[in-house]
Amino acid sequence: MLALVGALSTMEDVCTVEFQENAKVYNNVAQYLVQSGIKNSRPWFDSGLNGRGQTVALSDTGIDVDNCYFRGSKRKIVSINGLLCMKTSNLKP
Image: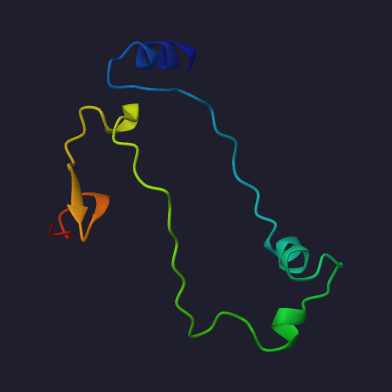
């Protein structure tokens, strides 16, 4: 494994090499921490607010086009309606 990491880290197209532990999900705890901070208290759920039929949007401050992860990418960064996006096969500028 160390030989592989060493070989990868010398490649020009590789920005970083790191180990990642398996993620542990604690959704059962996150529910009450976000809603009330009190164990097993879920006032939003109790009021019927559960996310069904909702639309959620996520925004970011933008793409750092100088980031090393975009260097040499076969995908192009394009402007779509004034927003910078990674061009994929289903997006049209």
